[in-house]
Amino acid sequence: MPDNPLQPAFVLVEPQLGENIGAAARAMLNCGLADMRLVRPRDGWPNPKAGPSSAGADRVLTAARVFAETADAIAEMEFVLATSARRRDMVKPVLTPRAAAVELHRRLSDGQRCAVLFGPERTGLVNEDVMQADALLTAPLNPDFASLNLAQAVLMVAYEFHTAGDETDAYQLPMGRSRPATRAETDNLIAHLIEELDRSRFFATPDMRPVMVANITNALMRMGATEQELRTLHGAIVALCGRPRQRAADGNLDSGSLDSGTPSA
Amino acid sequence: MPDNPLQPAFVLVEPQLGENIGAAARAMLNCGLADMRLVRPRDGWPNPKAGPSSAGADRVLTAARVFAETADAIAEMEFVLATSARRRDMVKPVLTPRAAAVELHRRLSDGQRCAVLFGPERTGLVNEDVMQADALLTAPLNPDFASLNLAQAVLMVAYEFHTAGDETDAYQLPMGRSRPATRAETDNLIAHLIEELDRSRFFATPDMRPVMVANITNALMRMGATEQELRTLHGAIVALCGRPRQRAADGNLDSGSLDSGTPSA
Image (tube, rainbow over all chains, first blue to last red; front, side):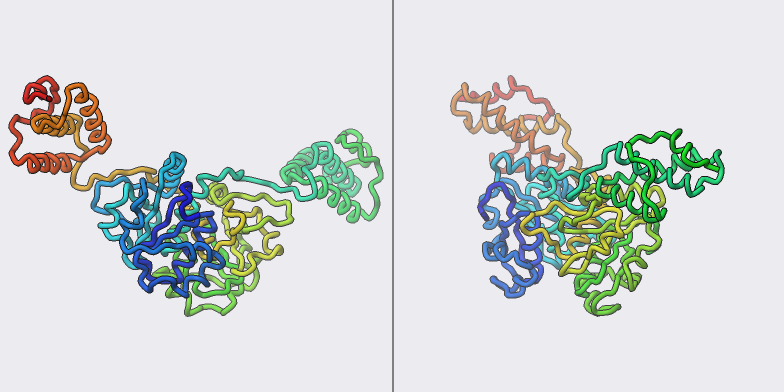
């Protein structure tokens, strides 16, 4: 998997804390990435503090490769991004994480090997490492507090990469064991409710009745109930009224017949 | 600041580790957010382990408010999202983090108060808390390893919220103290190089010369050099040739005059 050409390698340059390396491995695997490379990790490698914070992403840590120099870690790469929280005095393109994700996908689909460099916790990447990159990756965060934790930076880049290749619907409404109610079923619930409200003399004046019916109808329509929920609500109305529904539910809201049940004032 | 109606509150329900609360505060402030609320933090509050991992986001921790119940923490809210790594057996909308960010911005601009709930590290939110939310926020991550660290989940949501309101150009190329070269300046560098290559009898055959000139021209055009870089490259060519440029640089690439300088074969 580390040589999977469809994934960018994440290169941590001189990471200081084993906990952060573990958390970075977890964040990578959360986003389906597994090619981790370490350049001169401060406390050597393996680091016993990395495992616990990886929360089960051990295979990323086990497969991680260690290099003496950044140039060695990216020797076979065709496109390299350097993460940086700050501007560098270099004429080099600066991409947002989202634009970087699109560019990584484009190049990976073209068969290019790609890497993203992350600097040490305290200082970020030195200019000598940034120079080796094709572009900078800089997130437009709070300018007064822009420095991300190392593992957070890894998550941000990995998340954008994963999301750029993901086609999950932005909005979903799973129905579980039920299904969306049909319009006739919803109309029937509204009719049942209005019918009982008429019986209960809820509508104080005939003038107000149309507006109040419209409000109740709009609120219940907006709910977008499932068929199961409508049955529950029918039962709730019956329970509140203390008696079963008296007319057959035919699915048609006929305001004339409802009005004829009980005078509305 | 905690009552800023233009920001969502982030509600950590029963957070276990002070380190994670601190890291969550850092992630929030990275994204310009400051309204943190804690429901029954396991180890009480304040927690001395939160400060160090906040890396300077102390003001978020200091302003954090503690509640006994989730309902108390969100009592004044008009829109609440519940983060969840997994499906719930509930008929409730599920938004991606990106769609959730758009929805939060829409409602906040409308003056609505909004909150995002995050569950305890080990288990996530209980269903009783999820029920109180208008919608679930679920990131489409690696289905085999979807559980994010608490502070990572906070960063992901905060980052999407911040990004949704950000207009930074996806691609930037800062020029520092220089400026983009004009076409005439770039043509002049290419002319200088070709001229010296002609003199050095680089082009082995006249047949190949046009293709090689085109290749070199395209590579140098693609570089998109600054005016400063062109001056450096002029100097580099001069140094390699061991003599100053002999013809005046006039900014025009006249292939006839270049060819007349030295026979190309």
